[in-house]
Image (tube, rainbow, N blue to C red; front, top):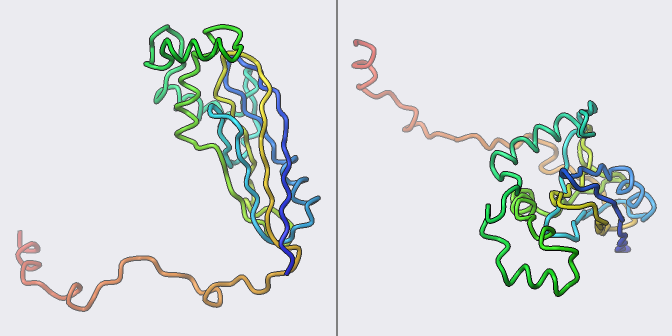
Length: 206
């Protein structure tokens, strides 16, 4: 059985001023289809510490910020949990040494380090998603889209998503576990646990 690995980098442009949600579903699907891998996994990973990858339904409607309604709902919740960085010293980060480091690596100004909200939000969501590939297709669900979220909104900037497709170019046979029987994960009580208890009568007499 042949095992194959394909890696691609998707370049994006975030707009700044508010978090940017990039729908990269089409590009990831194309990478999987062109890979020739029939069965395996597809890892979609952010190259950046203030960005996340999310699988979620497309809610279609857009508001005046060009955000889907579900994306705006998500952003509203995140702003309650982790408020936008709008005031100096609102968060402990960045400190003076980190600001100096930013200048050392040619950041255009101290303001670009005022992205603590983006770092914290990416921790909540994580920076990657792994999706199963079945018969050459992503198995992400009927309504799933793949979004790359740039939480860092201090400026417009280039972003990169890394896509790694791994698997076999051959069929894998029957996938059904236990012949497709439904796995019962509900609690299973013994006869003793289900038995009559005299206290039941006292309860009923009240």
